Image (cartoon, rainbow, N blue to C red; front, side, top):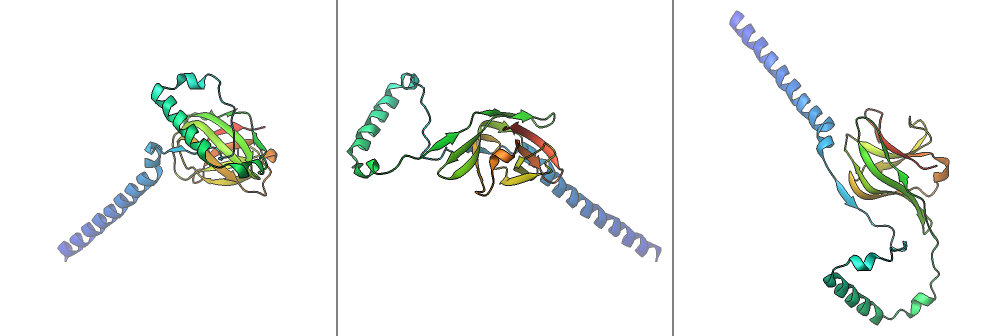
Length: 195
């Protein structure tokens, strides 16, 4: 009987060891692996936004790029654009660039701009680079503790140019910060002061 009890308790310990081991694997996968996951995004500005071009830009193009550009211009000029004269020009506002500030354990760089176009407001991260984390969201917040905030959604990219649409009923001027916030731990990853 002692042998049977010994086997039973030994199997029970083994079973608990397996359960704990599987739980640890899932926990490590959920909490640590996102830190090593780089997601590159290159969202474009809304199509109607015209940015002032650097006058010296064309000099930096190679001869092949200049030829391609010339061919594209020739093809574009062949298209009948008679309706474009009747279309009103859209008012587009692009804010100054606000520098992203990191926190000690969460390095980040880049800039944030607020873009208003076609009745829509966009929070745009440019030349952005940070580390990932578990369930990181983008917040518009009134304070760095995220007591009053609007959630713009999950982090879509850790590098590049990333756009986040602000709901139409939100007035961005009422918020002081754009931030990356780790929801499970309630931790600020990085932020930009937009006021």
